[in-house]
Amino acid sequence: MALLTRENGHARLDLPPLEKVPTHVAIIMDGNGRWARQRGLPRSEGHRQGTENLRHIIRAAVEFGVSIMTIYAFSTENWSRPRREVRLLMRILEMMIDRELQELYDEGVQIRHIGELNGIESRLARKVRDACDYTRGNQRLILNVAFNYGGRDEIVHAVQRIVRDGIPAHAITEATISDYVYTSDLPDPDLIIRTSGECRLSNFLIWQGAYSEIYTTETYWPAFDREEFHKALAAYGKRRRRFGRTDEQIDAEYRLPGQA
Ligand code: FPP
Image 1 (cartoon, rainbow, N blue to C red):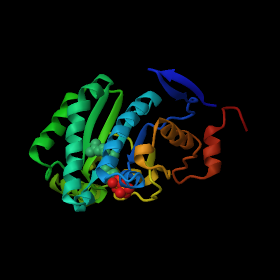
Image 2 (image 1 turned 90 degrees about the vertical axis):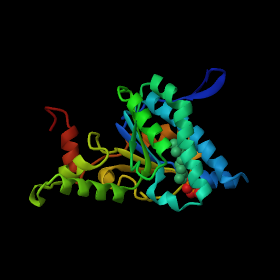
Image 3 (image 1 turned 60 degrees about the vertical axis):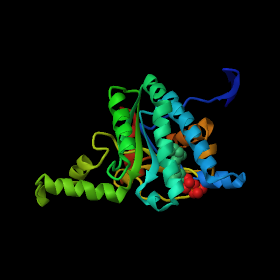
């Protein structure tokens, strides 16, 4: 059941409580270009609206009680886009830091970066580092911004550091790799959302996403609003996560003490 309420003069759907909120949600924000094309607008307008939408979804994540959100803002493959678009995406990140940092800080958001800052223009790289330092003490929502990020690249870097640290082959386990990826101190994503109807991971969190639930929607990212986000979290609440076990084992786990 959804009720219509008013907040700051705007109509707003009041949403039912969620049965189970995922701790870590990762999002592939896809479809900015198609959203713009559908409206006869330039791709840049799609990215602008996508950025605006990201502001709302970050706030919705705080509202719904998500603890960690990882967003795919710029992949290692995105360098092959037209130079103008690459420059625009860099500028968007810089603008977001300039305009949103204080508000995000005030809302308790801790900003982290995952990916390589090497190769990013030094002024932007410094801004990213400063934003991470500034918000380091915040605990309400950890926002991992995957920028110049690639999952394979991440694994290559992890392996290089493992070798550099002199860890012998026989001592390397899955836990070792998990300790060396960018998200080493965080739980793996429970839910990966991809907008715009594509059903691929596209090199996003390929190590961490091994057991993530995946939710896809036809909606383009700029139109993926608070209600759609809530729908994705509600769908997650209905999934049974088995982690390789059988349904019977899961049932036994959920059986109350004393029940046969
Ligand atoms: C994919 O849509 C989107 C991106 C490559 C960029 C995502 C960026 C934002 C949502 C803006 C926020 C950005 C930062 C840097 C914080 P697409 O352009 O591939 O869309 P298409 O597949 O329809 O062409």
